[in-house]
Length: 223
Image (cartoon, rainbow, N blue to C red; front, side):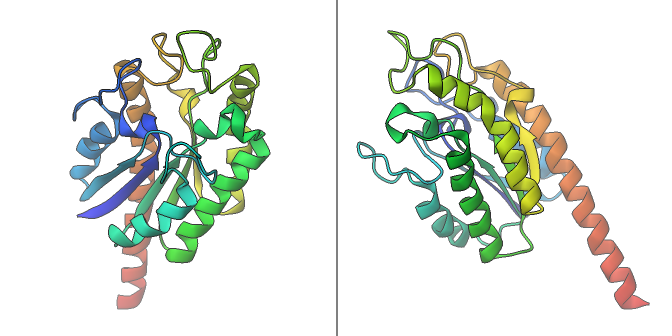
């Protein structure tokens, strides 16, 4: 089986909105993607972690800095054929004081890490769902504010530029899903289903193109 590494935060982990529970296998988008690509000879490696950022160090939660962990995971799960990177929501927290460009810079570093590890790995840069209005209000998540929401909405544009620069693939999760009304931050079960459809289509396109290219190379070598 070929490996698709899904590297993300709580929306890749599958956190249930408003709870500390995790959506079960068969509900979270990574499991739905896995079911879809199995018939093509691929499997999904889940690497979602609550609180993970692209490049920022969280002083209260260790091990959340994505650029430090991605090299380890690439080696641990090698060989890897496709890497899906969906980070940025936690980077919008107020204490990081990051704008969209700074967050995109961290994601670009992640893409570079993958390409330096193995240039043949296909990378899918996914801008996360936007934060919901009022996510900072009492009873929700005080680590965000109004500016956090605005920055989250700006991420698709700058992530698209990163993907183009590195000849990677791009997908905006916000085109398929949004935050739940429960916590204004995480996808609910329907959101996981809808996003799985979008990322599934993208991954299938990548797989078929890879197979086509491999067939063409083999044909040339024979001739």
